[in-house]
Length: 417
Image 1 (tube, helix red, strand yellow):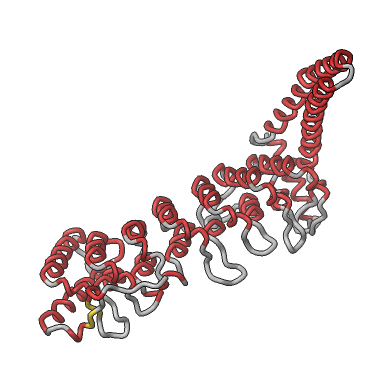
Image 2 (cartoon, one colour):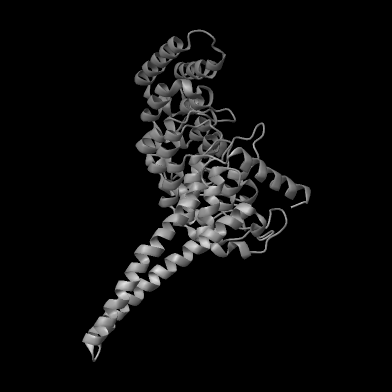
C-alpha cells in the first residue's frame, strides 16, 4: 500500500536540531534505553520517566519527529519499543498518539516498532494500534513480514494470550489469508494455531476456519490439517511433549469431520494414509475412539484403503473392525429408511395421477402403513441400539480392555507394523 507521511510529520534528523533540543532528545533516549538495568521500584521509576517524557514532548512537539543519525536511525518511539518492552505501555501509547507515522520509521522490517513490540512480548498493545490506526497494518513495511504471524508463533508457545491474538484477527481478518513465508511449506495462521507446544483453543480455531474456509484445505502437500490433528491426538506422551488428546482437540476434529468431510478421504503423498490411520494405534484412548467412529461414519469404505506399513491396516485393528461392522449396519438402516420414505411418497404421488386412483390409493396406503410400521418398530429401535453401542465405546476402557488392547498394539510393534 502506498502511503506518504504528511509534511508536518516528516522525520527530522537530530543533526538539524539546536544543541539544546539535541541534548533533550539524547537524554530521553538514554533514560529509556537503560530501563532494563533498573532494579529498584520499577512502577515508581516508570511514573517519573513517563512524566518527564510527556512534559518534554508537550513543551517541544518536534521531539516525536526526531530520528537518530546513527546506523539504526530510531525515533523516540523506536527506542521505547526496543528497550522498554511491556513495562512502558502508557508512554508508548502517548508517543504513538502524538506521532503515529513513526510506526513506519525503521532501518529494516525486523526493527520496525510493531515487530519490536511483538519480539519483546508487548502483545496487548498491538490490537490497540490496529484499532486506532488501521492503515499501519496495510503498509508495505509490514506486508512482507506481517506482525500477526509472529504473534501467532508466540501464541502457540504460550507466550501470547488468546485475547490479544483473537482481537488482532477480528480487527484485521485479512491476516487469516496471509502466509508465513513464501515457500511450499508456508502456512496460514489456521494451521500454525495447532502446531505449537500449547493446546489450541477450539472456539478460536473454528472461528478462524469460518472466516477463511480455504485455509482448511491448505497445508503441506499431501498432509492435511486433519492428518495433523489426528497425529497430535495420537502422539505418545513423553517429557517435553504436551498431551493433546483433549476435549478441545476433539472439538476441532469434530468440526472438520462434519463441516469439511472431504478431508476424511484425503490420503498422504507418502504411504497413502488417511487421517484415521494416524489414530489406529491409539484406540485405547476414549477421545481417539470417538474420532475413529466419526471417521468411520463419514467414510465407511476407509478400511479398504491400502496404505503403507508405518501404521496398522485398519481392518486388522480389532476395535476398528468391530465398530466398522456396526457403522455399516447403521448406514444400511439409514439407507433403508430413506428408501422406504421415498417409495411411500412416490406411491402417493402415483396414486393421484393413476387412472384407477381408488385401487392404487388403497395400495399406496397399505405400503405406507407397512413402511411406517417397519421404520418405527424395527429400524429406528435397531439404529438407536447401534448408536448406544457406538457411544458406549467413548467411555474409558476397563482395565482388562486396556491390557488386551495394549497387548495387541505391542504385538504389532514387535512385528514391525
